[in-house]
Length: 396
Image (tube, rainbow, N blue to C red; front, side, top):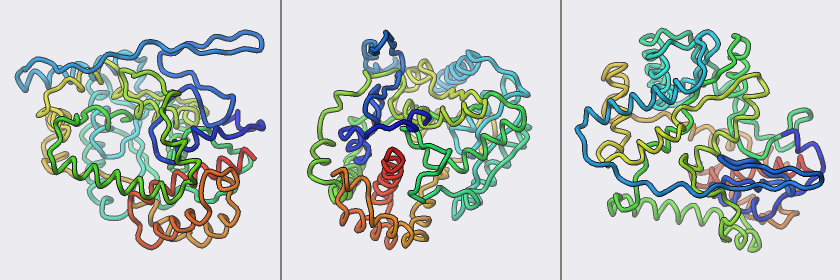
């Protein structure tokens, strides 16, 4: 974020891929001439010259030999403990982000097996997911003996104001819920914590491989991809569409940890560090990731192994069969609908349209579609555009 204080320009190809919602993790960043040191990479610096070197790609995942179900569970617990033990831990200086979901609950249980962290922190949602979230968080906090703190998403919603905020520059990666997250991180710092444990990486631990998908699952993926491409194509100019279809030749080589996990860490790390906190993401540990990716399908499907681990630690009532994950998916559609008039006014002048990346009429059509129908896919495309539009205005 500090680097955006100096005059620079958007990288058109990178920006096009970001607008198309392509997951990217690379040295090359949104601003021309600014690079990021990626996972396992090395950086060489000389007067007037800088270069980076990538390691070889990680090998493809190979399935593990069959084993008894209890053996998988014991190994999962052991790998999680090793991931946590590998980092320095002081109980009264550690806080954990606790959403009420399986990922953060797993990290909390892994920590409690060593020594309880000082505090748990969570963002409370609105709507139909609120009541079950409160019940789960309450049960986890009580059973693990945590000191809980929380903030309300309704009190600290994401900002949709496209005007740059003086003294608060955006970085080159997106944390869409920065306002609420920043309030949590401030609480952790005020409590004297300097280590922040998170569940980042949990979404990528138990993938479904393409050959395992049923025809129904494949049909759903095809429909979702078609809807996504339609929304993107209506927004982007022909120039940007062409750039977004280019090969990701700027991507980092395959990593032991999925690129989506690494990108999620990159979009939060700088803001966490500014508060004197060190983010620790045990579910992104490469050895734990490799173990989980090699699991047989019956242990991965629906996060079955993680669910069994949590039932053993917290009781079967906390994450029962059919558990519905809490999500932020309703935050932006409702927020955009409530602020549609303000956004329409601010978007009469559009920096990304001036750069030839988006069609001004397509922007307004997308805004109208989200405000009236509140569909998930158009919302994701619009939110990505709004964030990048604000960054483009900040860069001038």
